[in-house]
Length: 308
Ligand code: ADP
Ligand code: MG
Image (cartoon, rainbow, N blue to C red; front, side, top):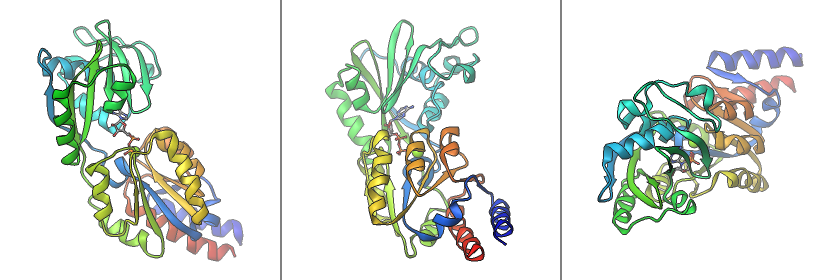
């Protein structure tokens, strides 16, 4: 009866837009005590948009967005999509961007901006544009790359955070030149999803963001704990530590969530996420609906009862 029960479980999940990648999910998911949720792209839509741009004296905001957009066109991060969208069209027009996604050189169509030596940093990306290495990311990412952050940019950074937005610093040639405030909204189905998930389980939010963008989730019904400012490489460690509290499910979407998805007893990737995340997961929510996470746990539980 066991293979039949598993097949039925896989099929029931598929009907709800859930692809089961590892049958171990039927063993582990019924006993989940702690659900760890990535923030960006998991609690939020991940559909970010540029809400505000501040530049230092002597820098043109279109030029800043052109450079930042060209570099971000090589990143898969939801923040990158927003910056690309806001950039002048010529920045990101044409070019075989997909094929060159890993550290190569990108030459776009005529008139577009070429990016050399693209690199992923800890909390951002960089690439050489017009002979200068342009850094785009967390203000600390600029500092770590040796770019100063002028005083004039401190308040736009604080203002963006106070509004729950992400301040994306853009700099080159020794200095951070501007801050692009990127905003993201909560998923429509967030409250309903948390209500189901939190029943009998501890809910932990895990994010690289800090300040209000992260802290506002402390006030959300069903959320027990928020770990903010967690760098990508520490996400898996945090999941590991939480395993002392019981069986842990991790839900994420980004490539930087992949090690945490693998570290958890149950890894669930949102379908809108990156390949690295879906590859590391035990189940993939193809429909990209957060409520399907609770359904995954419920289907696993009923399947497990039949296996027994
Ligand atoms: P989360 O855990 O919320 O999904 P991430 O770990 O993906 O967040 O990113 C953490 C922070 O790193 C972002 O808030 C941003 O400041 C910075 N960051 C990462 N990737 C990029 C990028 N491609 N462009 C700009 N900023 C980035
Ligand atoms: Mg994410």
